[in-house]
Image (cartoon, rainbow, N blue to C red; front, side):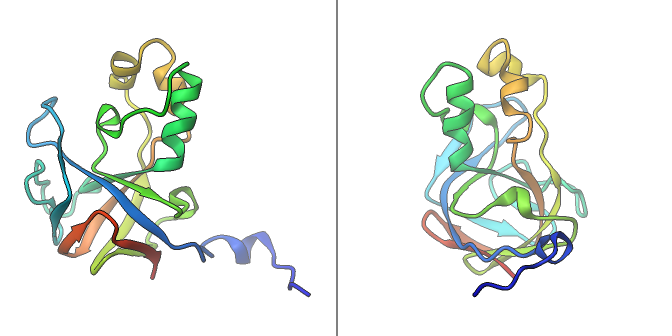
Length: 162
């Protein structure tokens, strides 16, 4: 028989383990996304080859769930949205990003990241996806994270809560 837990106990309980499915670099503001199979996360900066962030900023790495790409596409009357259109760095599957909260840490391969805040959609999504793009992404824009311990990551690496 399974033990019943309170909602308070369940917050922060993330037993799922997922995989890194896609990596995209944005070398310059509003520039094209470069899709790669592996990249290096730099401690307190972000992804090498991406616009490296100032030390300590919340927006070092952006992540979105692969499962949400199909939902956003369906809401926009399309197939699954290609990740480069959404301007995120990493796409993961099987790991519920929206279950993470402030200060929670997770690993992608050997790299250690820390949730910093939700990545709400911006007005650029309306430009990219068309009318209703902002609304379609609400609640599914992913998260932002800080790099606590840098390391090389590659597509297929596991992702799990620390």
